[in-house]
Amino acid sequence: MRRDGRVATRNYIGVLATVSCSTSVARFIADQFSHDILDQYPNVDGVVALGHGTGCAMTSDDDGFLLLQRTLAGFAKHPNFAGILIVGLGCEVNQIDCLMTKMHLQAGPSLMTLNIQDAGGTREAVRRGVVAIHSMLPQANQIERRAVSASHIALGLECGGSDAYSGISANPALGKAVDLLVRHGGTAILSETPEIYGAEHLLARRAINPEVGQKLVERVLWWEKYTARLGAEMNNNPSPGNKTGGLTTILEKSLGAIGKGGTTNLADVYGYAETVAAKGLVFMDTPGYDAVSVTGMIAGGANLICFTTGRGSVCGFKPVPTLKLASNTVMYRRMSDDIDVNCGAIIDGEADIDEMGELIFHLILETASGKKTKSELFGYGDSEFVPWSIGAVM
Image 1 (cartoon, rainbow, N blue to C red):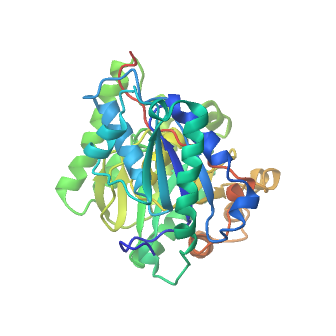
Image 2 (image 1 turned 60 degrees about the horizontal axis):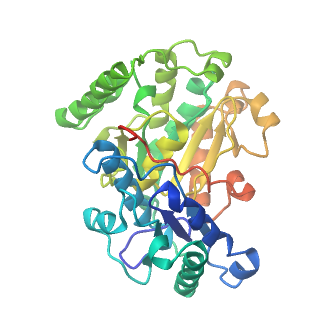
Image 3 (image 1 turned 135 degrees about the vertical axis):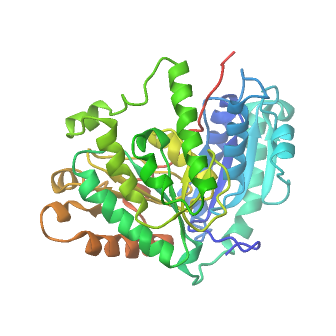
């Protein structure tokens, strides 16, 4: 429990780059904190560097710049971080002062900033960054777990490498777990607008009022214009892996994908990386690309991710734990080191959707309470921070 009442599922310190030019220095700082050092702080899950490939050669008044700043601010304020060091180069478009002002971030003992040019270069910047992180560690280590209700869980829903089984096993089983979470006062975030295409009307009619339904329709219309402008088509979505797995059209994929959202009402619709305030099932407008989609949901406040897959996935998303759910037993057995739950038991006749949903829900609770996921045990999550980049690169 953080001092402001927010609840974390993990307890990290983050080193957040404003621009691609400061990404390496952010990583150099985080790399200084070996297991030997962190062993002195048993309540801290780690020091993670979050770099990306943008932050400059862009205009400061377009949508791409707003999305980047909103994403960075969402991570800076995320409850799973006990402390954040923001690292900039000094001459980039995404200036630290601009980010702090526009996103209403306040510097202090748990949110510090550093410019490489002002520090005098790489070596001194890394030294100052290490000092800053060392000053945060004792306070972060004082945090201890305590019992809270499931209403504090904000669950991001993602599917990647879907196959023909996803829509009849993993996705509806996760949807059953979502219904249980919503019943207990929690939040679930459905996303990936291009991957609900053709089935958006099934979500819109579940909206709590016409305004929420219209917000969803408007996002789909925006995507139609956006892709058309780039010479692409919304109905040409399934990837090579999807097709190999038996999905032939975006409608087949979408009908399966919305199963992750369960059966409750749609409480609200959010733009990419916007702070999610509503309880219940909500929708966030994101691309279908897994890393970009999950990055947006975490920026919006997701403190746990459930990721369904039919072909297999090996990603993770620090600072948030990620549970992976297999749609079929063959893939689960082949990649059991990476997958947390085998929903293929539904296909095999060994469990039904209700039973699997109960299992997933209880695993969500255990994971939120500290149980490590397969991706965490491997150490995934340092390289999957990918803000949505739109607009001209100049």
